[in-house]
Length: 348
Image (cartoon, rainbow, N blue to C red; front, top):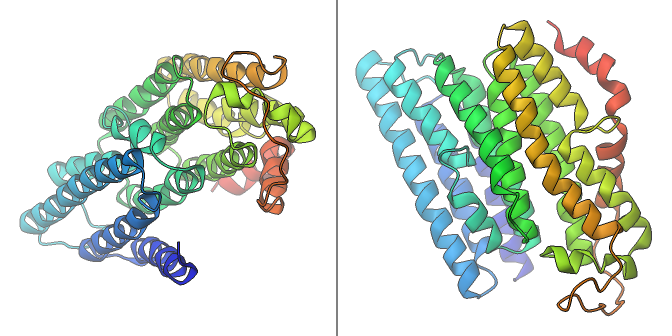
């Protein structure tokens, strides 16, 4: 892709998210989300491959449906209450509609079916943008409206953690596994949203760091399925030794960074008298942990080639920048000791 066109598209992507962040009016927020969608579509379709085009079409249709629902709900809210302000949304009907529209935008279960299919059709760089940056604007809106319908949020959150765990069990494609991982993490964030928005933000931040390092590892190894992952010893032995820690951090095992948000969320849910919800969420984390362990096993404990498909790769030097990978990997593995400081900042 022409670097000037790429710069314009990335600028549009940043501008769309910033407009949504800064807006207090529903029309402006909707416009930011639409700019965001339109800017990423050429990035998704830049490889002229039928799968990429199919993924782009699916993405466009789901995002357009979500944006139309959002617009309809905000107009309904203006009609019922006379308010266009994002903070002033009080009527339950538009609130529920907007919550569901934003859930479709970020891929929360049961509105998740497009996410694994779309992510599977993209290259790892665009997949990284879709899994991290594209979640920010809808999340800003969800945090602003503070949906009052607590049952809806808990059902969305629990469904996402369970489906995100179950869906990833049978997959061999890394991008689909990461999509289900994303659904499960978003479920955890939504569960605690109404009780402690600051913990939700912390979970989102740790999710962004952990997902970035996972995508960058796969990109460095040029891995798209479990078999190619098993041949990564030949390319980057030190990174291959560290990758299980990144994956287990995504799974939420102590003493890694990923344990911190899960710990705080379970603590908060128990404080709110939702012990059964917390138990179900913790059990669903075991499902996710299984497929992270499966990836770790394939990567470090199998001798390549471990199958007929896994051929030993050419050891060509990678052109990828290693600084972002080094930073995100260090943060994915080492931030748990900061939990007391972060807890002190989170308590009002």
